[in-house]
Amino acid sequence: MGDFPHTAVGGVSVSRLLVGTNWFLGYSHTSAAKDRFIHSYMTRERIADILTVFLEAGCDAVMGMPVPKLSGAIEDAQERVGREMHLILTPGFNIQPGGPPENEPEAVFDRCKELGARFCFPHSSIVDQLVDRLNRVIRQYDGYAKAIRERDMIPGLSTHLPDSVVIADESGADVETYIQLYNSAGFLMPVEADWEMRIIQNARKPVMTIKPLAAGRILPPVGFAFVWNTLRDQDMVTIGTLTPDEAREAIDLSLSYLERRIPSHELQTTRSKRGLESAQS
Image 1 (cartoon, rainbow, N blue to C red):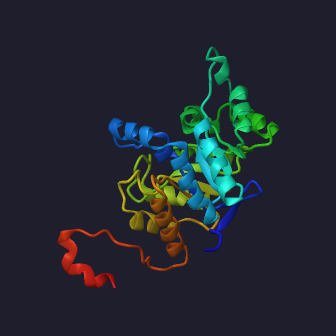
Image 2: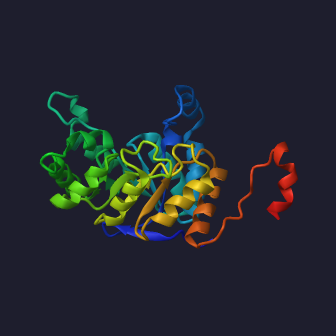
């Protein structure tokens, strides 16, 4: 298998399929019980096994939080494959005076750099508080972008608000990409999917989309078909997986749609589908 198709963000070549980490770090968007299962199940070794599958296929960028378990698993996968994986970090930090000193923006950006981040985007929990729809600016962002650049990392916006993309473009904010929710179910999205589609189409920079399967609410063939057939060639899809087999399936389905092929993936089998088995061949 050759390399997965790539695009460029801030002059850096990255795969169009990005590795998500909610299924590594315990954010299921399902239940507290599922979160606890993920926390107990996902060891550094299991994360590295999944990252190895992606990296071997040329998917060379992972998006997540600045935590040692993730950074360690990335190191393990890189050593196995002999190839670099770009780290996209989306940290949170103090945005008002009086918070813990270790959570001051510059201290957090320093930690991101130490963990090996190539990209550093303030998390949506930060950005979405700073979006000023009245004055059409993202308050304080310019200072954060400057501090990120000073540490030789590439800035962008992690946001759940489509307004952030429009306002960043209008105001000339220093962004190289935007993280945006995008799925056919409209899961967690503030506006309808066709509105988000148009915003992404008109964005001045490449867009990193997240939640393509609505945290497991959309079947993979359906969710991937929607995003890959409605994004631009420069845009990206972020997918989280729980096992190496899920990673392989995500890669294979994505390549099928990018190559305009109907996927030939293995279907689920149940007793009620027994009479349909000849349709698989």
